[in-house]
Amino acid sequence: MMYGCLGKILHVDLSSQRIWQEEFDEELMRKYLGGRGINSYLLWRELKAGVNPFSPENVIIFGAGTLAATPAPCSGRTEVTFKSPANNAFAKSSAGGHFSAELKLAGYDHLVIHGRADKPVYIWIKDGSVEICDAAHIWGKIISETHDVIYGETHDIDVQIAACGPTAETGSRIAGVMFLHSAAARGGGGAVMASKNLKAVAVRGSGEVPLYDPKAYLNKCIDARLALMEDVGAQSLSKYGTAGITEVINENYSLPSFNFRTGHIDNCYHIGGEALIDKGYLVGRTACNGCPIGCHRFTAISEGKNAGVASGGPEYETLSSLGSGCGVTDTEAVLVGNWICNEYGLDTISAGAGIQFAIECFERGLLNEQDTYGLKLEWGNGQQMIDLLWKIAKREEGLGRLLGEGVHIAAREIGGDAFKYAVESKGIEQSRVETRSAKGYALAFAVNPRSPDHLNTEVYAEFGATSEAKTLIEKITGDEKYAVSTMTEKRAEIVVWHEQCYAVTECLGMCVFSTTLAFGVTPQMMADMFSLATGVQMSEEDIMLAGLRVNTLEKCFNVREGFDRAYDTLPWRMLNEPLPEGPVKGLQNTPEELNGMLDEYYGLHGWDKKTSWPTVAVLKELNLDEQIEELEGKIGA
Ligand code: SF4
Image: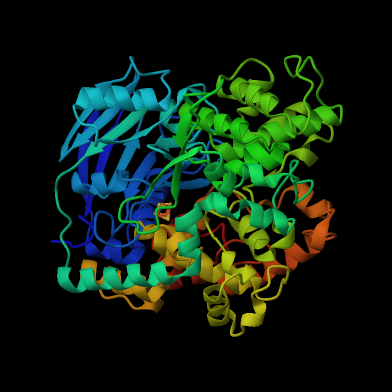
């Protein structure tokens, strides 16, 4: 019998309608911990190199962490793993909420979906029983309507649902997997679901998670919760949500604005957390399963032409992407844009990046009114932002369809200098962090196997904003003087440590806000909780090594697909244009600076600096034997 993990993987092949269960043992859990780690192992195992992400051979995997559905703090994250249609690379995306807890209570740690149904379907999992249900009547429906229909058909409003929206059904590579008020938005997972004619997965469970030492585990979880709530960052997240940092970042001239041309926007208050409260839009707060922080917000517009718009968020990323990035400080316009993305199933980061890119291309004469449905695109026009977002959401012929492919493809199609204004690398849009004034983030974004974003490695500690952050930087580097984001020294050490910690957090099914944005939950605490929940003894060192193994496995996926050092880069703008104003004026990510950090980073990993690939010796040390078998001959000894 296993503890913590149930040891059960559910497979559903939509082509053949075959449903089967696979069991895994303690050894696999020890090696990859669970959640994200086992998801990544399954993706590696199920795919061969070169599979078209839109083909039935791609899989989409939902994973609950080892500590899901237990009292561990912030243990409500669901990992979604697939090969990305945006860039043909490894993709994992995660969402908050309660889906993973229900999956576990229904009897499964992981769900692997193969094949393609011949007509729209949804999968309904309840306590070990699995049905493939007709979804013709919900194909084309927005997310809230999809939820309502499934609640009705299952006679249960506590069913947890992962769905794709109407934009995913058009094959948009920027469409995410949508949950109730949360999204695994990045990488095009929604489009992978839709390519399988899979509208949704609904889960409900009433089982239990067996724990090795329930009493000691509960005490350890209580300790972790108390430590977390003493952390200043956690207290701030609890009070203001992620929206609370918008104005602070703007004051530091590092709020991506006007398509990353600058880090500052006037009237930022209107797209900050306080405005949402002051103007009466904030109507609720929610928390993911087991979370004492509760950073999620719910907003609604109760009067005027937009009355009835109500949605989860907007989070900081959305406020910056649809707001400052487009030069927009109209609160209500951003709320409407957030609602469109949530209901049509779009990644707000990528959708906003597309609009910013279009405005800049228009301004520079690369697009004209014939391309923009007659819109004279300009910065700061909230209604225009909404109009263009509708075109993307509905994939209207022309620019709307093109931007739904992502800015990498759009820039190639438009041609000329358009690539300079597409703020992306590895084919996916950069998230809303100004890397020119945060060098650790710059390195983390460049090496992220998926895309330039903070969702593989959050190195917030490099700002040294709290005493906890400074203590962590001291632990990693030996001196808190390195808690300065504009330094390049020790960034490789900081990134590698955070990669491991982030991976461990996601393997356990926990939220990285508890470990790498706030710092209350430490790797030692995670090792203790893991050991007491599973009975598999892990020290801090052991668990961080497993995190390193998971990161290396994910790197191997990209090596197998042919990604080399040339892909570990940053958007053109970051590498070629300095920040123009404020205390960060003149800062940029030069190619020389990035290359220096990359050399150090590959060196710490023991990877080949020329190709960026792990060597056979490194894979051996990490017991990644299956990867050696496939990659030997390609990678160095
Ligand atoms: S901190 Fe926020 S995102 Fe993280 S688990 Fe809690 S509510 Fe969810």
